[in-house]
Amino acid sequence: MHYAFLTSPFALAVSAAAKQCLNITVPVSISARNGVFNIPTLQGNADATTFAQKLTSIGGNFTQEALLSYETVVGEYDISVKFCKPDAENGTDPTVQVLTHGLGFDKTYWDLPFNDYNYSYIDMAVDVYGFCTLSIDRLGEGNSSKADPLSVLQVPAEMSALYELTMMLRNGTLPELPQAFSKVVHVGHSFGSTLSYLLAIMHPTASDGLILTGFSQNGSFLPATVASWNSKLARLNQPLRFGNISYSPVSEASSAVSSLIERISNGLNTHNVTLNEIIQEGQTTQLGDLLAGLQPTQLPERADLPSGYLTWADAGSNQYAFLLPGFFDPSILHFAESSKYPYTLGELLTIGSAPSVAPNFKGPVQILTGRQDTIYCGGDCLATDDPAIDSIPAKSKTAFPMAKTFEAYIQPDTAHAINLHYNSTGAYSVIQRFLIREGLGPS
Image 1: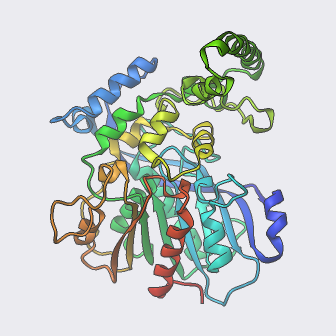
Image 2 (image 1 turned 90 degrees about the vertical axis):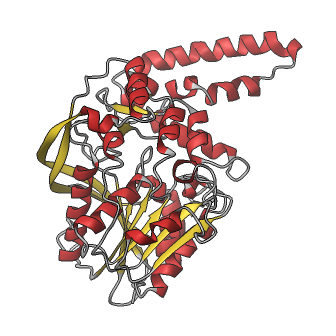
């Protein structure tokens, strides 16, 4: 295990009245009943396209067609987490929120290092409302251990890791955090909401409350989403971050490209094409992804990911799935694309594997989804075709027959990536107030 108190310039600037955070590497043992799939090793981007075509075919069930059997997957892995608490102790019975990100992100989704951290969910939960948080890099993502993208990185195995972390919090056995929490709530986004929902099904007493953001149980729009991604092998799409290419040749190529762009720009001046337009074209196409990570201060250790790790093609695919035009800072799209994380074959094959009902979960449940969510609402969460049902997420009330409270909140002017929109902090406040109202605030 490794840990370090966060000492970023931002953290220092607000430390007098803000959060204290600790980065921890947590060893976990997982045990999960995963699927065994007959999927050949992907050799290139054309194979990724073929996989997506089969997965999204109308009238078919490629997951079932490719499924050979089930096997119990066990293993020891390191999960990277960040624990944050208020600078000043707030009562004797704190509540910890376990924050699980979705596909394409890591745990910084909850503490976004963009625009001086003004989009930080953790700042709102900890500094304003006094909660503790544990944000995690899901197994296989961020700084957590990598694993086989087909046989291991599936919904059941990732939920197993989430469960182990949860029980460590409850038992006071999380490394470097010798404190047992009696109130543990789970806040997920998208795929992270699916994992939190499955946790409530498989271990209904593990969580005291569920917040499922970017979520509904309508999966009919997922094929269109996967098609819009135009998936590529992550190691080919962003080779500096996810492949094994060295920095020097790409840096040299980048310099040559910059010189070429300058010459092209000079030649196109007579046609009213500006250098800024050329740069923008590069940032919004796969050229921008190819050069992601070129800044020496941002250059990560090369991940050399296997070909079963995929990512969407470019910034256009990113915007289509996650952002609502006119309601996000255009710069955040470039930031999100250059810092994106991959998804895996196993995750795509098992994302719909959770049962439709959590029959024994008795805590409060809030689903908070953007009105214009494309992935789970087809672009309009209020389009239910049934006046008796307020929204598509509201249909999930029947999935929680024993829940203390169920609420479906639709965040206006927001698409799937809630935390990347201008009004994200408004959604954060809705979540905190719900938890406090349900008796799950710090006390």
